[in-house]
Image (cartoon, rainbow, N blue to C red):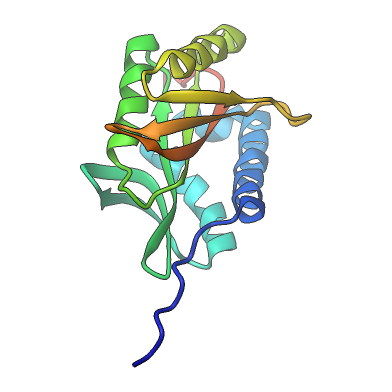
Length: 184
């Protein structure tokens, strides 16, 4: 009988590489607000999937069924989910808390790494980020906040799966300050 192949798991270095590409894409989009001024969440997600597929060779997908719904960004390698991401436009604290629950509902027992990408169109970006971080830290599944590194603009957390306090997930919160939406 053939020995079972080990399951693929996204290592910390690869996870950081994938997040680094997201951060560079965010920075480029923030420097060019006219690019996203007329785009909704779905169109912005599509732009981000291009970068994911450059690294993961076409294994990043959007709007993919996983667990209890369709996640915005899913990277699957060797039949294992290695990255689950949810994109949201800031629409207030209650909607953001719902987004945390939504992301957690898209994770199955084997999922270990994910990201919550927040597209902010408000003028007071700092206040929105502070409210979002507080919402994550007050979430019932919050385990701990990982100390911020020298890298600005991202905060990492450890959450546990809904209903399973022993199964932990690394969550990167990545805000995008995209500027106001166009009225035209």
